[in-house]
Amino acid sequence: MGRDSAFLQETFKALLRINWALYSTNISFFRAVTLLDFEFRLIDSITEIDPEDYSRLINTDNPFVQFDFFKTLEDSAAIGHHSGWITQHLIVLHNNKLIAFLPLFIRTNSYGEYVFDFEWAKAYHSYGLNYYPKLTTAIPFTPSAGQRIFYDPAYKNNELFNAIYLQIKHITQKNQYSSWHLLFPRKSEHEELNDKTLLKRLGVQFHWFNHDYKNFDDFLCRLTHKRRKNIKRERKQVYSQGLTLSNIEGKDVSPALWKEFYLFYQLTYAKKSGHSGYLPADFFTLIGQRMPEKIVMITVKSNQKVVAAALCFKDNNTLYGRYWGCRQEFEYLHFETCYYQGIEYCIQHKLKKFDAGAQGGHKVQRGFEPVYTYSNHWIKDKPFREAINNFLVEEQQYTKSYFQHITEKTPFKAI
Image 1 (cartoon, one colour):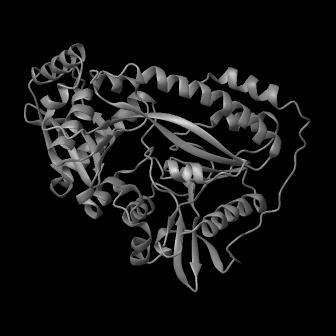
Image 2: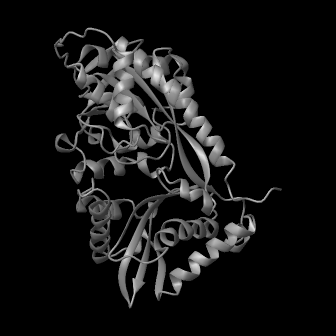
Image 3: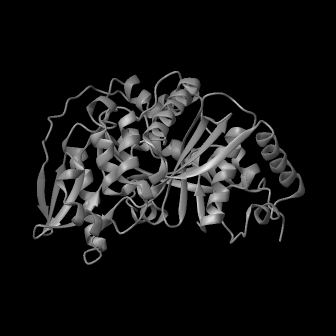
């Protein structure tokens, strides 16, 4: 689905044939402003919010927006100046009562976002301008869609929604930030932000949906003969290698197993990209202590020794596949550990969906279905905004075509 770097660079140059002048912007240190009886504040840490007030606003069991998830990112130093995720959450108060929350970060790079804008940064650089720092509303290192703007139900209305958006634009305009990016919001949030200057972007992921299956064989019966046969063959090959797989709930993951898992996690990054993973060891041990009910780990043993593992988060409706790694390679083990075990877990625990992470068109052959993901982008500089919009219009046509093409490849039997 990507475009190569040279093509994008030339696209931007063609669209931006303008004589740019270097300029500097005086930084306005925005901390609080009152608008329409709402008080807006930027905070440097989630701990500046009372956990009970925060829980009252969130009103969802999605693991990635819980107070403890953000706090663990901070406490483990997974985010901060060194990583380019600098906390600047926006909160809204009315009569000193917390009524809205928007996760917000100053970004000095684009790593860990999974909505790729590296070519946009290159285009800025080619004209002597800075793309970073920018503002991003997202869950760090987590390409999973969900609610991004949270309200006290008594205050949720279009006036407040628009006031928050206007305040974000104000912060971006008055400071050195090039842009604001809202990543992986719910479709309703994506569409509700209908300002013509706010750019919209589509992406594609692959999720598995539980159609009230009784067991894994019941799921397989929905597939074509060819795909059903291939999955059975892959699973048989895994177990013929003498491997034993187990699902371990978060409360039962021992410190020693967390240590093993972190090794696997780092090995995955080392093999794929040659650099270390984004998350430090302390993140995993702390999240295991603070949110055990949101975690399940799938372990693989060979000769009674753990050789691979996958870490999933969960809520009452969804299993989220997040991290995987192995000490040694086994044929089809990745598919078994990261896909089939998760599907079985969802069926057994009556979860409605399995979000197995970003990318991976090969998931379709294994019963996953394409879904759209969304993002919104406000670019401060008008010429760049227009150029990027032209690119996104073209990209959206490609994305929709790809979505249609991959939908036709799903392995489900016609009903």
